[in-house]
Each structure stands twice: as C-alpha cells, then as structure tokens.
Image 1 (tube, rainbow, N blue to C red):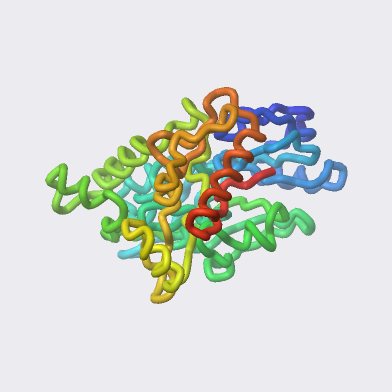
Image 2: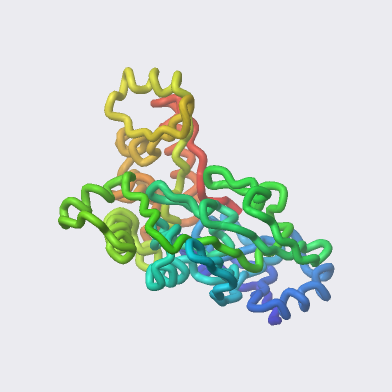
Length: 338
C-alpha cells in the first residue's frame, strides 16, 4: 500500500476543484486494509473515505487522510429460479455494475444507469433516480471498522436507508470502510416505467413491451440531455435533494403555483421537484464567478472551467435563500461540503 503526501484532488472529484490532500491512501485489496491497520494510528486525522468524488465538494485543502476506495470485482455467489445474489467490491464503478446486470438480464437497478458513483458510495448515499433507489436491491453491506478492524456484515434493514441517506452518512460516517455489497437482483421483469419522461419516450419510439437494454438506453439519453458529462463540464449531477413537505404545505403552495411538480411519498407527505422550484424562480443560468446553474437542468450546478469552491458554495447559498424566500421551502444539498 502506497502512502502519498500533498496530492492534488482535482482528478478525484467530478467538479474538478483543486485541493491538496495532506495524506492520500489507495485501497485496492483486503491486503491494503490489513496494511492500513498497522499504520492507522500514525496517520493524520480526520479520515475521509472517498469513492468517485461525484458527491464531494472540497472547499479547502484536506489536512487529514483521504482513503480512496479502488477495489474491484463482481461475483455471483448464489442464485435460484427467481433471484440472483451478486457480491460487488466497493470500488467498482456503478455504471459497470448496471451494464453487467443489463447484459445478463438481471433486474433492479436499470433506472439508475449513468449515475456517477462507485458501488460503495451507492449505499452511503442510497442513490436513486426515475422511481428507483439502490436500497431496493441491497441485501448486505460488508465493511471494516476503522477502530477495531473487525469485518462486519450489515443487513439491509440495519443500514437505516432513507431518502439519499443511510447509517453510513450518520453513525458510521468516516468510521468504516465499505468493502463490498451483496445485491439481490431479480431474474424476471420488474421494470418501473411510470416516472419522469420514460413513458413518453417509449410511446415516441413505439415500444410497447420494453426490455432492459431499451429502458437503459432511453434513460441514458434522457440523462444525457439534461446532465452534462462531468469529464467535459465539471458537475456533481443533482446538487440538491427534492424537498419533502406535508399535504398542508403542498396545498398552500399549489394555491399560488398550480403547475408545481410533485410526487406522493405517502398519504401525508409529498416530494417536490427541486428542479421545478429552481427553474420557476428564474435561476437557470444564474452565475457566480465560475459556477453556474446549468441552462438545461436547473438541479445541476456546473464548473464553467474556472470556478472555485467558494463560487459553488456562494451559488448554492443564493439558490437556497431564493427558494426559501419564494416558497418557504428549505433546500438541502446532496453534495457533501468538505
């Protein structure tokens, strides 16, 4: 295991923001975790567990230790007539797993195609899109405790999954290294089509009974039309969470904004489309320094090539203040500020 000092993090976050890590360690195997155990007390704290950097904004140099997870591997461990259990190493690129499932006709994560993430980070964030969340397919999360270095297996119900949230963002935040995840995929069709513009695209293409490849292709194209490739234009995908409000609050807002876009969570709670709130507030294209709200997708903040972390933070705060003043709704970021 290689320990590096004063490493630029520009290539380790999708915003492309430059910051320097005091100490940088890359984990590629169980042996590296065993090595880490021997030196853990000598490393500068705090620790930050980093995957693809798709949900991270480094607001300054990091004085602690970055632990970069880069272990790979996808293995089928069990199957029956209906289900297949697949263990995936935490450093695998999320989209590689989606493609693996599509190519093998395993159902459960097809709507999550093209989300920039690693597999380990998918559980931390409980990533979701187009009516689907990763928690629906996670069976077990395996991790190593950074204090005891014991290996732990956490069942789905103990991961405390919630909307873009989990135990790994709270009680276990930066205290454990997720090493792998066991997924339970279906061998039969469980397609979710009634979200966003999926159905309209199917009708446009005259597809009545779509297969996995057709669905992922449609969602891939929808995402590409809205969210720029972070390799070309720095961004972190959806910058804000969709706020959840009560039925009473929704009624008040609908009286003033009858075209507001929302989705039921349960009988008393509704998820509001944050992109609609931002666009309706005329914030598309709004720019501070080198950071701007994307012209095609109001939920995305982009780095126009010369943005600083301060620019992004200021723009984020401006958007939150505007939305609070206009709708009396608080927006919360999906992106983690470090």
